[in-house]
Amino acid sequence: MASASSIQRSFGFAVVFTMTSLCSAGAAPLMIVGNDEKVLWDDQGKVVLSSAGRDTVTIVDLADPENPKIAATLPVGNSVVGPPVNVAIDPTNTLALVADSVDVIQDGDTLKQVPNDKVHVIDLKSDPPKVMSTVTVGKQPSGLDINPKGDLALVANRADNSISVLTIKGAEVAVSDTVAMNDSVAAVAFTPDGRHALTVKFPAHKIALLDVTDGKVTYSKLDLPTGLWPYNVAVTPDGRLALTADNGNAGSSDGSVDTVSVVDLEAQPPRVIDRVIVGDGPEGLTVSPKGNLAAAAILRGSNMKSSYFYNRNGSVAVLRIDGKKVSLIKDIEVGGLP
Image (tube, rainbow, N blue to C red; front, side, top):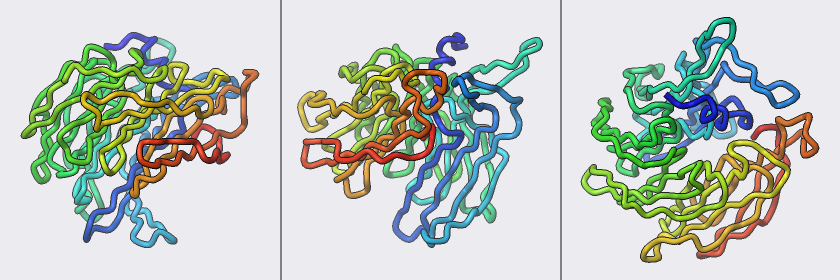
């Protein structure tokens, strides 16, 4: 089980939902939103816990993007405990995966957070969608990703320093292997060809390369230095670059600027070629479908009301990708804890 400090690093910064969307040929686009009802923050940025059992997952139909519709809201345990990339939809919109990272239990007269070890599988073809199975993985499953073929998923287990490998055969999802990573890993992302994946080693300030061959995942032992406390990783659609959101302060703001690291995946071996300065506390990270833009959600101290660097709102840093040059082009103010 993870120490209290490893749990503490995880929260205190993110909104209480996470989401991902995916549109494949012939399939209506869907979005999945995980609603964590256990964790809130007070005006001083301190965590306020509630009893477990009220979490939900919402499936949103985006066939008409001007008029999104809720297809289902399911009672599914999940957690905002970072980083909030704990949901994924497969390329055919057949199933979704939800990592249930952290549970809240009664400890004497108080509530405390403890690592969970479950990934829930949702049947998206059912009308309405429903939970069809739950898979036991490593402790504190967090960031996860499904490969482009839709037959393999990877789950970063933060409290176990490992990656769980899940095989997907139709509606059947099962653990096929566990890859030891030697450090706590927070998020993972496949390359577009499915032959590699990258995972961020949060407390080690590194990004690691995984090799994928015929469903077998191996750790290449290639670790690259990122900025401090990398939380999320995203790969461009052409597979040439990877980006990491370097949080800078172990999962929270500290009033100082932070970075997005740029990894050249075409170099042999891959290497970090740049760091782009963004605002205080980048966390969420995504690349546009065309691959010419990226966006990072910036915390800006928006849950730290008693701090000198408090801002009521967070922001989104918009980055231009031109070949292998990545640059900040705009910072858009949004609501708190984006």
